[in-house]
Image 1 (cartoon, one colour):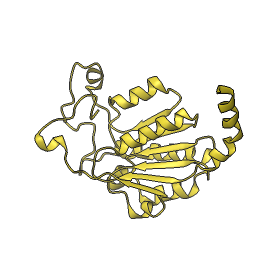
Image 2 (image 1 turned 45 degrees about the vertical axis):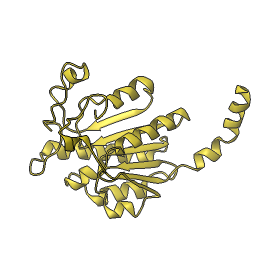
Image 3 (image 1 turned 90 degrees about the vertical axis):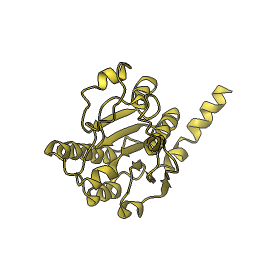
Image 4 (image 1 turned 180 degrees about the vertical axis):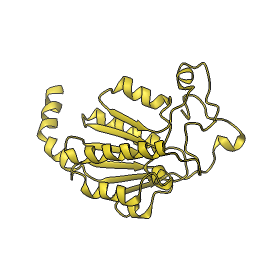
Length: 210
């Protein structure tokens, strides 16, 4: 049975690859955009597709799902371009909980030259990855956040989409995705927040929110 499946896989390999190359967007104010993109990365890796994840404008501190990917699927490349957290090591080991201080997050009126430099590095890498031809799926996590904080321009991202390799699938996540990007998408999923524990005063929970 395994031989038959392997043979079928080889016979249909070209067909599977020809189906790649679309543009997906996960947006909205609800929880689950990054989670959906990471789930897609796991599925793709199970089919031996090459995956690169580039995260913009969010902290590079500890988040459980990224360490899980590194342990389960180290071949998935993850690059993070954001602020760090001084407490990340202790949080990872369970000695501290995230206090929601937002030190690792962007704030209106507090954007620095380093924030801009990190976003530009992320964009440069995304442009290189999307055009070199050896990556099946490129995930640009929180790319709209970088745009909305004026770290990148809409034109930057539109150009990336338009100039990517035809067979490279691109997934873009983040709230308030610009209309110019939505117009280029083949798939758009909007996460709508109906209820969230934050409203009850429940802080981010280890293993659930981070």
